[in-house]
Amino acid sequence: MALDGYSGETLSRQARAAELLSAETETALALAWRDRGDTAALHRLVTAHLRLAISIAARFRRYGAPMGDLIQEANLGLMKAAEKFDPDRGVRFSTYAAWWIKAAVQEFVMRNWSLVRTGSTSGQKALFFNLRRVQAKLEREARERGETLDSHQLRAQVAAEIGVTLAEVALMEGRLSGMDASLNAPQGGDEDGREWIDVLPDDRQTAVQVEEAHDNARLRDWLVQALQGLSRRERYIVAERRLRDEPRTLESLGTEMGLSKERIRQLEAAAHAKLRRALQGRGPEVQRFLG
Image (cartoon, rainbow, N blue to C red):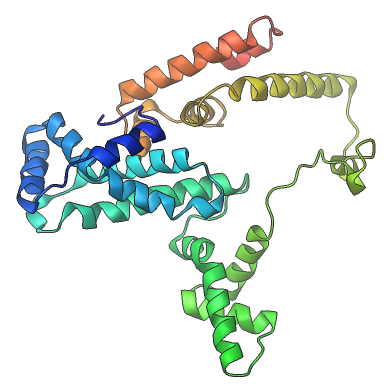
């Protein structure tokens, strides 16, 4: 796949040196890829539009994701656009690619914002990326009219402006009001105090259940430490292939990430090798995870 495996810094350097394509050259490259599977033409088309991908990625820095990760996701969107682009429609590639790039980056931001899935519908995405801006605009307009909006009025106007329900606005406000908090955090900020998880109701456990829970907790800690040594992409592949109730196929992951099935297999194998080295000497229960 074109540019697969490049770092954000490498892509930035390539973008600065990229050529500017004329409409005719752009069409010729797109036709060469579509009709003959010319990967060199695909690579040239994608490389020439890296500036576009990086500029769109930069708009989402305020959401806290590393710029390198945003650029990588923007590049995946760019490659997907190049693969699907139809030059016969008479649309410039940059116009077509911008939608795919923005969609890829938005999906990444929402996927990594919280452990709790923030939303996937068009209305929820519109709220996630526009709620604060629309609220500020409505409040400013109200002040100019000499009015003051209470929270219910503001939510109602936001719902009408974005085209979602009042309940969706209230839910998104709650999700954006703060990041995830750990149940293992001590209450009252006292490091030696009781953790929040201790106040949750808990059914009586048998000795076997307690032992299993202890072993599982220890395994989880080992795996978390080992997974931290993987790249973001490797962690995602391992999670989708090993940590789901219904593991994803290589083909479905390849389609989502814009990579070949063989490339996904290679990344998974490399991730497993790293995990084995990190977990070497741990208990036998680790083997259940590594297979």
